[in-house]
Image (cartoon, rainbow, N blue to C red):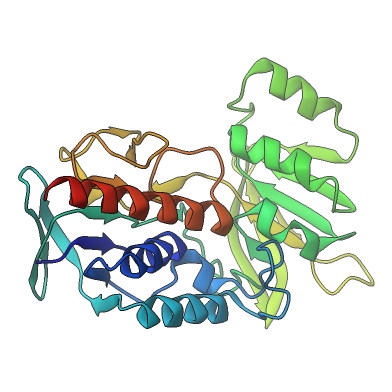
Length: 309
């Protein structure tokens, strides 16, 4: 019987593990794959306080794991396939084993929705990005292309004009899917241009992104976008939505568009069940906000477990 079962070993889950284990809770962190979540795939961390000497996201995660283990947190690789959160004893069913605990912290994260075109995965982190706040400075004074037509895509495109020489929004339809006020602001943005009725067909390159092939879905005209003369590369930011890793919790906790709903203490709709990180409803999804969530969730999980005594 664990005091705290944490599902997910990204920054939120590991942070929760550090706080829970340090509070002398018997803690297990269950991760289905490589720990770290999206941050483990990030080549450079530049906006997390105090880590200027950490070259990669993976190294930051390795330090977090070492810290959590030093306090006694147990890590295990297993895929959670079902949960029973209804009773005082919470039951987590994995493919390999079954785990029982007094509290559960859900920290399963979310993943950017992919275009699923050739070359996308190959050049992610090598010219293709999914987070403007994280990666915009790497494309200073370069041409930047943003794929998407929703509010996130348009707002991030305007933000990226602070960094890029030019920013071009690639829109699949002939209109934006945003409020009129946002559209008007975007159309007035000097460094932002829009290409309508275009879709990305593939990405190419050698080591780094070297070309993006797009097609006009009205005329069939194809265009190959390459770096301007003198530039080593250009940037592509893809904002076509995120997919929260919450399927296993469907019908078990309250969700909003598949994101798990919580209050400021990270409590979900179920007693003894907390949530942290990108899988919950929140405004900003960053490493620094994820570890904040994890700490709050663990502290309140401890209070809940103590209330059972």
